[in-house]
Amino acid sequence: MNELTKFKDSLSETQIPAGLSVLLQALWFDGKGDWEAAHDLIDQLQDKNAAHLHAYLHRKEGDNWNADYWYNRAGEKSPQLSLEEEWEKLFYKFQ
Image 1 (tube, rainbow, N blue to C red):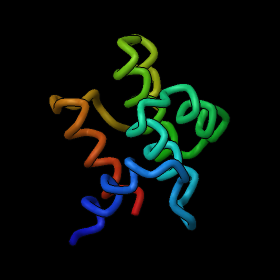
Image 2: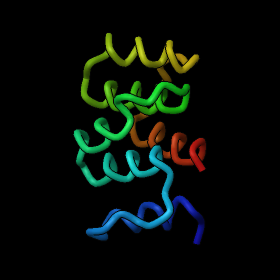
Image 3: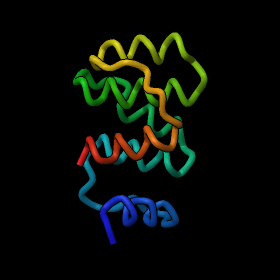
């Protein structure tokens, strides 16, 4: 079983898996449908990876102006991917 499959399987659990970075914790909460918990974890982080996740979350929220701001801070462009594809891309990026 690959790491992405294990991570996705953990979304059916009630407890967050131990040992995840803050970025993967936020991605996990988003995968569970808790956008606010995900956003709260990365809202004050300043690095480019956090900015990329922040952009994804605002894109998911439908706030494209804010998403574009955060993609710019991350040095990224808004992707031509589905939200699910971007979520998976972020998982691999944050491993």
